[in-house]
Length: 399
Image (tube, rainbow, N blue to C red; front, side):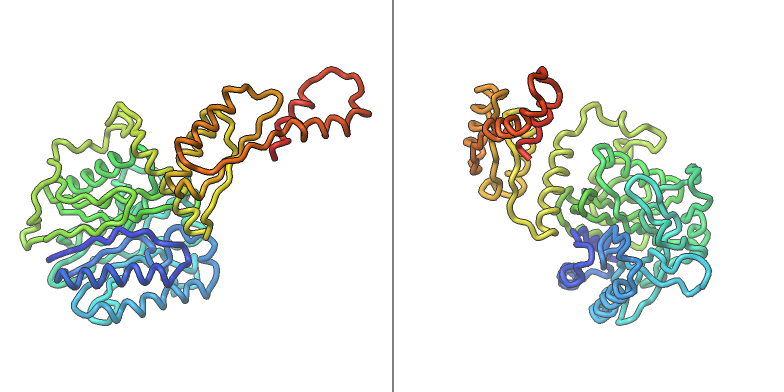
């Protein structure tokens, strides 16, 4: 069975763009004669949709995408993420679901069990947890399909009472597939590898993990989709911070045709603290995450240009360099706003930085603005000594 993981950058609520991306990947999968293509968690609408889920027309648009993609499922299985309605009156109105489309029909739907409600997650606000668990039959195989957090509990997480794979393993599945939207953290690469290894070790099954990529306002997703064989060897790894299609061949004996990329012995164990995996802070990953966050925020909000203050200090220098890399130097204007408290070197440094980055800049001295405030306030301040009040006026003059 040839399986393709579609690691894509979606736009919350931009159904036309998301559908176009998915259909392009589907056409590539068909051209490569794949049997199954897997998309990430809530791929039809992008993750996290948050309060858009409260609007019925938003859910209708999600389901319309499923109807469109059903027509593309002739000759190819399509596994995607989409909200689904809860038919039971009690509980939340929606499930966070995975749909299997094939031959023009919805063949199976499974729901997410573990709904994270911590850090950037607030899923319990919107979704009802699954209360039944079934494998998805597909081309003579049984697929144990889970959604993101579902594989992060191996029975050792006190937040949850259920371990979904413990339920699914009783039905003798052939492979585990996880649809994910796992945000960036500078040690999360090792953490994901460790949790996949722990699942494979426990259930003795190959595991395919499809993550999303890109930024949604303040949350950055780094991609890095993974495929691991039943011996905990890594056989495929998606790109980080960019879209990617990962193709593998799962044979009838549960092995992959692809050679091992990283042996099990080199993959960290789940019991270890991920910070201990690497001594360094992975500055390269943090840099890519910042660039992705800036670029996607501007693109998805429809912005093309930025203006920022440049003081000659390290904070504004790093910000300006990142903005120029993400948006193009020609689209970033720096404002140098020296005052009577600025040193000549700080101004020179800010000018030199813009000269190197080749971004436009303006020098607007704020001493006249500060002096105007002081002139207006002179009757009140009188001959009181200079203190924090004047300092605050100076600090706010650039605004």
